[in-house]
Length: 210
Image (cartoon, rainbow, N blue to C red; front, side, top):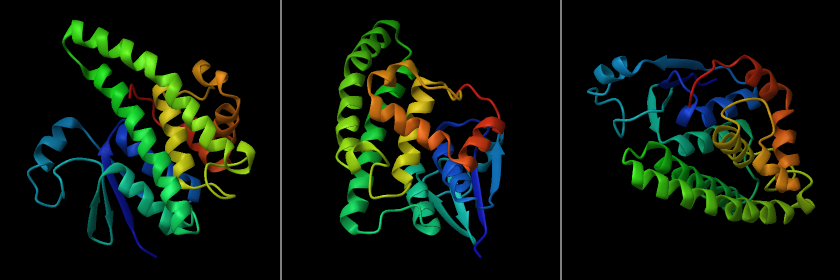
């Protein structure tokens, strides 16, 4: 049995997809949370492939990049589609979620007030269109009554759930108002949130602003 150590900051952020996959699978891992000050010292180490977090250490091998880690864990724990075509569909969902997250992050972290206001308006206008596309993709699999790909939970569902929870519910255990306009996405969000291992983790995970 491999040993897993996930290193990230003491926030949800980019480390949360991997944490959720671990929890959904019911697998043990070391959840190493470092301060930003500690990271300043650690960053100089050549151990970190891209000099950034999160990093997953598997039996001494270091893996970087948030979604790559989540995909790897999905493959490890059977939370992955069964065919290459279905895996490509799952990755399409993940990459779409990354695109929407990046738009929101750009607006959130922008420091120039004028530029920030412009980006916020652009994100506000673009988000419903993104969600409508996700709704259509979900409906294309089992009429939207299950998961995004195939007939079981995969890393794509977990990453999409985390995106919605982070961007629109600020990590709270609630259904964001924005997705109530998309009934299939709302049901999907509730379905993932109700998975016992995920539900228990959401109730007990440390609170953070991000």
